[in-house]
Length: 520
Image: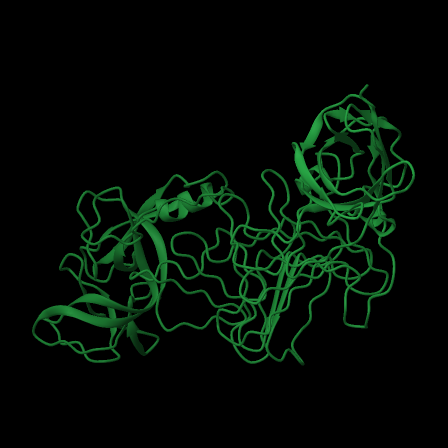
C-alpha cells in the first residue's frame, strides 16, 4: 500500500526588495501522493542588498522537514503565484514550476516580480508544491519601515546632517525624458504640495537647464501667492547682457500682465536710483533708472502706449536728462512721439520746424518748397475736432494770406488709423507717412509754419541777403524780398505779409534756400 507523504510548511518571513513586503503567518497542511515520509517546511526572511541598483525581486527562504523535525534533502517542484485577492481575484505574478533544491532542509528562491504591482495594493501569495496549492493564501505584509511608502503615509524625522535631506530621490544616467519622481492628480486635486514654516517651500535648481518648469494645457503654468511678501521673486547672478532676471514670451496674450489694487502694476528700477523721484500710488507702469526710466521700442507698432481716463497718459521726469524720449527707426522720422490729445510743456525746444496738417484746396498740385496762402477750411477729420485748413499756391506779391511753406505730402491715415486702432491688439500696418512727389488736389500736406524750411526763392527782380524779410512773390509759389513801406516814419514790411527771414542769399536767380519761417 502506498503511503501519503505529508509536507508541513511554516512561513516565518519573506522580503520584497524595493516594496519590502514580508509574509509572517503560517501556511496550513499540504498533502501529496509521494513517498511515505512526512516533511515540514519552515521559512525565514533576510534583506539582500546587492551592489548598485536594488533588484526587483522577492527573496523567499524556507526549511523543509519531516513531521519528526528531520531535515529533508533533494529537489522539490514548487510554484509561487501572487494574487490581488485572498481567495479569488487576478494573478499579478506567476513564477511557474520551479525545481527547488533542498539541502539539510533549507532552500532559497528569488522571484523576479514587476515592481509596478507593488504600489500599495493588498496582495496574497499562493504556494503550490507538487501541483497542489496550500490554503489559505498568505497576505503580503510590508516590512515595518516600508509602511512609510504606502498611500497616506508620512515620512517624518530629521536628516542625517544639517545639509542632508529626509528623503533623496536621484535619477542617474542619461535620460533626457526621464524623471527622478512623478506626481499626478485628477482635475480636482493637487499633484504636489510643499510647505515650509520658515524656510523654502519648494527649491529647484539645475546646472544647465530649468530650475523649475511648470506647464499647463489651458490654465496657469505656475501660480504663486503670498499673504505678506512677494508672490514670486526672481534673481539671476549672470553678468551678461542677456542674463535676464525674468524671460517671458507669449503667442497671443500679454507678455506680462500685472495688476495691483492699490499700488503700482509694474515698477522697474535700474542702476543707482538714489535721489530720483519715487512715485507712489496706483500707477500702471513706473520706470526709475539712473540712465533711462522707461524705454519703449517697436518694429511696427507702438513703443509706449499710455492711457488715462482722468489724468496724464504718459508722465516722464528726470533729474539730469530727458523725462520722455521718443525715437523711431523710420527713415522719414515719423513718429518718435504721437498723441491725439493736447500737449503741455513748460518750455518747447526745437532743432527743426513746427508743421501744420493742411489740405490742398486748389486744383493745381503743390510741391515741396511752395509758398502757400490760405484758401478756406474743410470738415473736421473726426467729430468734435478742428476743421482742416486749406491752402493753394501763392500767386501775388505781398499777400496778407500767406500761410507757410510746403514740406511734403502727408498720409492722413497715419493719424486717423492710429486713433481708430489705438485700443486694438493689432495696430495697423506701417504706413508711409510722407510719400514723395507733389500733393494732388484735395490731398493732405505738411506746411511749415515756424522754423527752418527750404523755400523756393525769387532773386531775379531783387537780390535777397541773409536776414532779409521775405513775403510771397508774383511768381507762383515763390518767396521774394518783402516790399518796404514807411509807417509813422518807420520803414517796415507791409503788415501781415511777412513769411520769414532768409537764412541764405540768392541773387539773379530762382532757387531753393533755407528760410526761417515766422509768420507776421
